Amino acid sequence: MQPNAGFGENARRLRAVARLTQMEVADRSGLHMTEVSRLERGVKDPRLSTIVRLAYGLGVEPAELLAGLGRAEAPDRPS
Image (cartoon, rainbow, N blue to C red; front, top):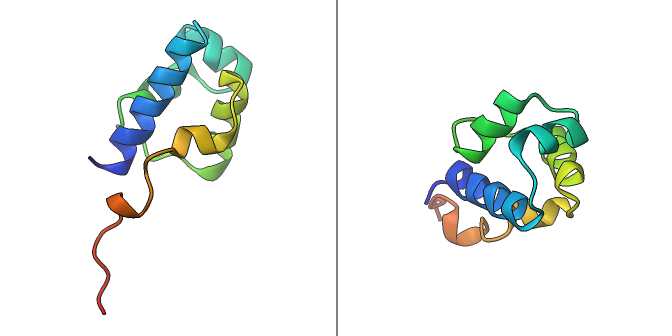
């Protein structure tokens, strides 16, 4: 799975757990609802500041949005 898709799945899942709409998350985080939608769909590559703002809007730590996107998803590095 691509990192953007995994990030989006995490964001969507955390929003569902918090029982928030995309509009509520956008209002709480100071992001536009379209941006929240694009992040959840994995269309937009989030900046660090966006990750922090989205986490705040969801009421979670930024690390929760990045869960599962570690080394297993990293491209191969030359030796």
